[in-house]
Length: 327
Ligand SMILES: [Zn+2]
Image (tube, rainbow, N blue to C red; front, side, top):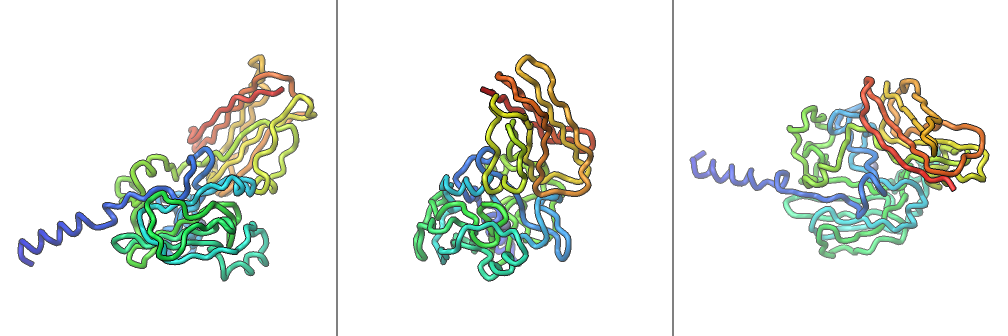
């Protein structure tokens, strides 16, 4: 190869799309407030699962990024699903109902339409993105339509193979599925040192992501026992009032790891420590985890402070506090 052609090849490399892309999130929402990253691609070939940064936030065979809203109630908020970059709509499907898959039979039945209502967009330089589980009737684009990054495609839903309402984003480069956090092909192994990652997401998106930390989906003080199974349907329980006969400090988490412990501290209106509970170490990884500390008796009115910490190897990995006024 001549010096000139070698230089030309270098220039091509420097302009390769994997370096130049700055994808945005696939939904118009506030990460960590009204939407949450639940799962990433599985970077392990074959059985078992490992997420892009060698953590637990994935499952065997998952090929994309899941950006969720809390519950089926949030579907009615019409959270926009948006194009992650400029492009042109290739194809789409609508008409599949929004329904959480909770039995093996339901799973089997929906498999041929696992993506549910979806859209595929072609971008420059061999990049293609696919968006799944959109809300039925929400798709507002048609094949051939040109889009700018951030343009609305539809709304977050739970159509197809979905266990919680979310948008699933698959990224393909020249036909191969790629993890947008590390730039590696899906199944090509995780990145232990984050400086080795070549993200397709923008630096702003990457700065918001904390894939190795548990995510606190919600916390609060309820006046009734919380039914874990209804959380994903009805969302967080109503806040306690003085008319209630119990008070339950609760926390809802994603991606906690085997060995993690959870500390729940509740201080009452006059500063008195009402609850200080630490759970036993978790016996396995949990994609979703719910915990609470309850006590009989009507809560007195006033301002409470709830403080929740996840501890890993004895050190806090995530902490959140919330001031709660009981009336
Ligand atoms: Zn997914």
